Length: 282
Ligand SMILES: [Fe+2]
Ligand SMILES: [Fe+2]
Figure 1 (cartoon, rainbow, N blue to C red):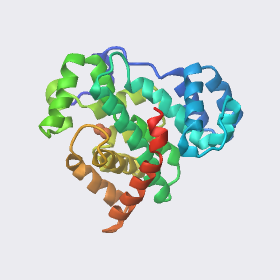
Figure 2 (cartoon, helix red, strand yellow):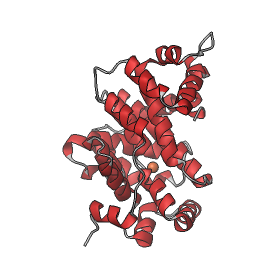
Figure 3 (cartoon, rainbow, N blue to C red):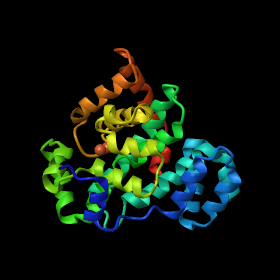
């Protein structure tokens, strides 16, 4: 009988709690009335995060002529939308990079960030609503891998390396080793954190977007395409060809005519390139 997310959590023991700042920002992000002042209050509580916001607003990506030195200036410079991305990415970073950080964790994090930027770029170019949700979906899609790495440090690192070196199938190897895979673990975590249903679907079904509920299928498809694109630009571990089936499902869901995907990908790659400076700040 397949293992349920509930049983999975019981088997895994304690899961990391959602960081307080991230929970607050997720809540504010969903609130159209949220102002820069609301974000200011939250960010000011976390000195490391405030420092990161300052660094990003000073980064070349935003081409400023003068140095930004206060949080208020930084928030005005970035604007609410970019600010949300920075805060969410910073919170997600602490989730991906926990404990002793090896090369796999770094690659997982880099992959998450590039997938996030690419997800948003796909969503924007396809004219989908909730582009910010696409960013968060991309950011969190492989969080299950991070949980597996923390829970099973001796087994999961070598598994990821083997997947990379032998061009293996990640989900199958996880199933063999643990009886479940990182998408299932991610779903359990997302459920425990009460993330929005669309985000839960994107985390659970990024390898099989056609199985996501109808209301969340486009979001999941966008994350699936971005996931493959991230590997194509060499952010992360694994062969992008392994994600061909997921991408084909995404193309069906988004009704992309032949040739459209290639053009779209060129655009999205350019967007990822442009956001590289921000990415480098993390
Ligand atoms: Fe994945
Ligand atoms: Fe991924």
